[in-house]
Length: 373
Ligand code: TTP
Ligand code: MG
Image (cartoon, rainbow, N blue to C red; front, side):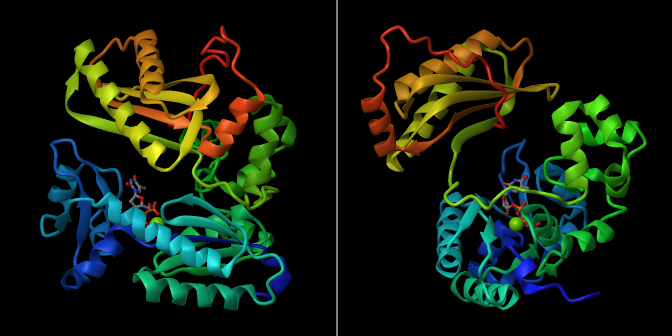
């Protein structure tokens, strides 16, 4: 493989290995090397993380905990401790920021790092990994490349403990035979539509005639799919794209049909969510709900207000109205509420001072958006 110019290595993607489990192993070192699963305990609990030892038995994130117990009865099951996970995440990202000026945090255990200008990006990343490990006990996988797309896919390629450096052409060659869904931004539905057209690998999508993709997927998505399949990405590492939304959701132990029970549950979650937003001094304009029915149909509804808010009464009222408008026609399995478009409370006050809300502004101004709840 020809050496890649260091200056071509502009972006790194960092992702902690088995994040929740690794944190648990730091405080239960006697469990190292064993199959360990972090999951809730209700009848409908799902696995949040499985150690790599448990993954060998087919236990992975999002499968029901009951199924995980069947697949791997000898696994140790631990309840999640989100407060600690958030605290460790904060420490990990603090270390990242002390090494690299521009960081885009995209999840509790995941971030893009802008490496442009570093003399020796590989060495800088190795040093960062050592620091993270020393301070938190976490190991991470890293992908380094010319853009975010290559970096992200590369960081996933050799987990755990991966350190994969690729230029764009190498990424195209290495993942040529992989399914299109490997690429962030190509979801299962799009992958299915591509497959129906006979486009089952990234190489096939990359080589597909642009006109055909435009006809099938439209003038925006069509060319975008082809660009992504070629690992072309112009997206910059966002300087301060931190938390853009916060949500609470709950899978009920039994499906709920009673409107009153649903409204109570939603109001409780909205109150909790606003408590957290207020504690973090964050306000948002877009309020959304998520409803999953007993047949797993999942819908989201959202409404954008004229002013950012973290007011529990306002958020609850909008969420309840969205629920009433949707009026679920089947028993409800899961319910969630989200406030998005978050900005600091201070900026929110500046916004209010600049453009006072007209008395009769309609709350549903932006109509209903599909939100990635
Ligand atoms: P991931 O980075 O996707 O998973 P991971 O860190 O457990 O494992 P790896 O990166 O080595 O593949 O997610 C980070 C954390 O987010 C994970 O530890 C638990 C949580 N999570 C869920 O709660 N539910 C999920 O479905 C997924 C995928 C993750
Ligand atoms: Mg991870």
